[in-house]
Image (cartoon, one colour):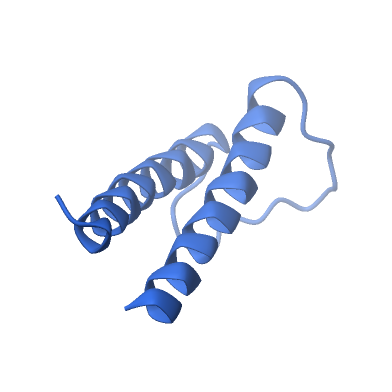
Length: 73
């Protein structure tokens, strides 16, 4: 397996995880996918906060692997 194939598989895995985590967040908010805004501000706690932070982490890792793949190949 070449390094290009490895980066491709890592990107695929990260993108599947990212979509899953985003869908879990939307389902956890109790609203639909589109236009499910609440009228009041509330803080994230517990699992919701962990999912939010994990989403940010996955996004940064996905962007980094994308930049690496563009620069190297």
